[in-house]
Length: 195
Image 1 (cartoon, rainbow, N blue to C red):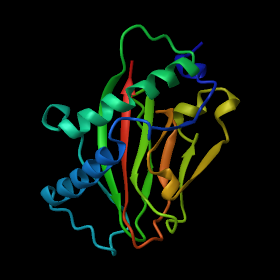
Image 2 (image 1 turned 60 degrees about the vertical axis):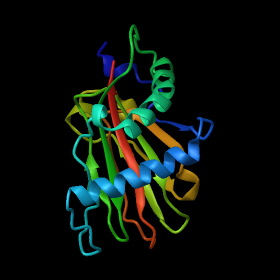
Image 3 (image 1 turned 90 degrees about the vertical axis):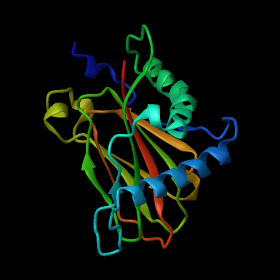
Image 4 (image 1 turned 30 degrees about the vertical axis):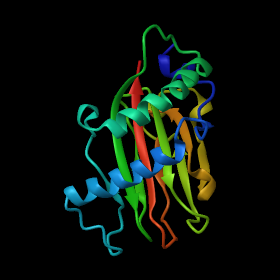
C-alpha cells in the first residue's frame, strides 16, 4: 500500500497556546515577518491581489524560527502517530515561510509534494477577516489515491480564534486562504516536513 494512503485522519487542528512565552513568541514572529518583508523590498500595496510570501527561511540565521519549530515539533510527532506512519528518528523541517496578506489579498492554491506533512500556524488575525483556509484533494497525486481523498474540500474559518493554532495535513493536499476582508493584516507561517 502506498505510504500516502495511510493518512486516515487528513486534517487536525492543535492549539499551542500552552507553550512557554506564547504571546512573546507570536509578537516576535510578527516583527520577523514585517522585517523580512522590508528586506525583500516587496510592494505589498492593496492593489496587489496575491499576498506576500517569503523565500525559504534559513533556520541557522533565524533563532525566532528555530524557536517556533522547536515548540511545534510535538504536534508534528502527534500527527505522525495519528496517521500511523513509521517514525524512527525525528521530524525533518524542510521548508518554512512567512506569509502576509493585507486587505483584499489572498493566497493561491499550492501544495508541497516533496514533503509529507504541512502545517499552517496563525500569528495575526481578527474577526473581520471573513476568510477560510481551504484544503482540497484535487491534483495528480490525490488522483492516484483512494476515494477517501476525492472529492474533498476542508474549510477552516480564519479569525481571531485562529491565532495560536496550527493546522496539520498531508503535504500532497492543496491549500489556499481566501481574500482578507479586514483592515488588519493576516500573518501566518507555512511549515513543511518529512520523516
